[in-house]
Picture: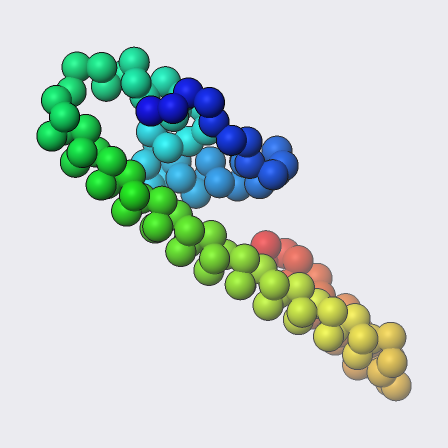
Length: 110
């Protein structure tokens, strides 16, 4: 593998990527893939091809899971935004209290 790796946009993005990838394929975490040539120096060309095929699949699985995560996160942010608007522009105090409770519940669910 190429030991010159491109960095992920931010530390937070890298941490999130590693969190997801660790569950799928630990070899593809950012701390591991620079070491893979040494770790797998013994394998045959056929074994390497099989491993690379799995890595491609693992990356697609990770992308899919991250996309689902970001979609759910964006939906939750929009829900909180809607609740805040309702709270700020709502009329009765009970509506405001319910809105605040919903916001707290949304945050607690994270």
